Amino acid sequence: MRQNLVIIEGLVLVGFMFLALVVSAPVVFAEPSVQWVKTFGGMGDDEALCVQVGVDGYVFAGMTNSSGSGQYDVWLIKTDSSGSMEWNRTYGGSFNDMAYSVVATDDGGYAVAGITSSFGSGDADFWLLKVDSFGNLEWNQTYGGPDHDSCRSLVATSDGGYALLGFVSSSDDAGAPLGFFGNLDVWLVKVDSLGNLQWNQTYGGSGLDSVSTLIETNDGGYALGCSTASFGAGSADFWLIKVDSVGNLQWSQTYGGSGTEYSNSLVATLDGGYALAGSTSSFGAGSADVWLVKVDSVGNLEWNQTYGGSIADYCDSMVISSDGGYTLACITQTPTFGDGVFWLFTVDSSGSLGLNQTYAVSAHHSHTSLLLTADESYILGGSTRDPMGYRDFWLAKIGE
Image 1 (cartoon, rainbow, N blue to C red):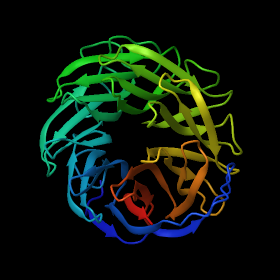
Image 2 (image 1 turned 180 degrees about the vertical axis):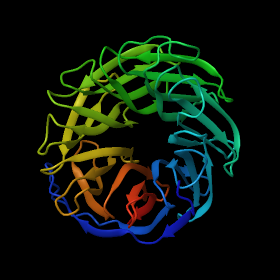
Image 3 (image 1 turned 135 degrees about the horizontal axis):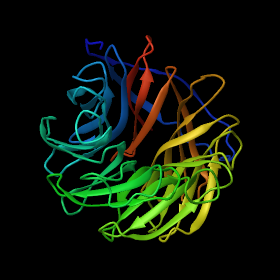
Image 4 (image 1 turned 90 degrees about the vertical axis):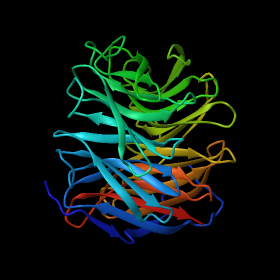
């Protein structure tokens, strides 16, 4: 394992351009400026998988093999409001451990969820860690069975506990799901304020079913943004699941065509409905395009739009603004930049395109995360490759 952790701070945006889209915008919008850019990494691979607003700054998490005790360890970084590192911590054992979701807690600390192969009962288990305001570990819990179980989304619930969403391939042993249907199923786990298991539910069919986003709804239940190969029209479709406060299924809907659709982001909309964003190969102009789907409060389709060029475009993250519009953080493949660039664009409440901006970041990035800040700016987080080819955490603030 390579050591010598370093922090590299500086401008890594190397170009801007506007992308020709399926949906065009006749209105000219002010280009948002890059307020700052930071990268963090060592002499190894460091990949950011999630970012969240922290106390007077930001916190983001992922995995590192530049430091720590295992093959990959969870890496948690806290920055100030200008993106400068305040502290960082690694957590893990002798095998692969990584974080996919982080939330701020009411006591000023953070809860981090992901997967661990170092602890627990299976090849990989859900892993929930609670840390204080300086990243010191307070407690941790694992959940899973004998096979591979992977947590991808975490919410702090209104009762002071947590809910974790992921996919599961384990069907027996202590802590495994109550039911199991196929090769991979959706698994929702509810725990109390100390991580003790309260209940768990699985959802799925005979095919591969995966997850992206969990939100707690106003009625105390949950909405689950998923993708399914068990139901729907194509090889994989968007899948929206609504459950009550103890995980009982209330309804579910699929959206898609004859090709492949993967949902990567879900938000609750101001009118009581939902919006899902991801990618589609059934519709649009390229081999894959960004797909935005708006539905009502019970999942009925209201409208959908595709956005993209002639190659491949994917949406990783989406936020809703105070006016009911949406901002999408995406990856676009272009002949100019090869591996692709960050792509940020906004649409109004009916899907019409507004701001449309791309940011070329080194030669590689993945796992784009997006936050809307109190001053109506955006925080973009993800990973980029350094000059030696290793991945680094990447964080930028963009605003007018």
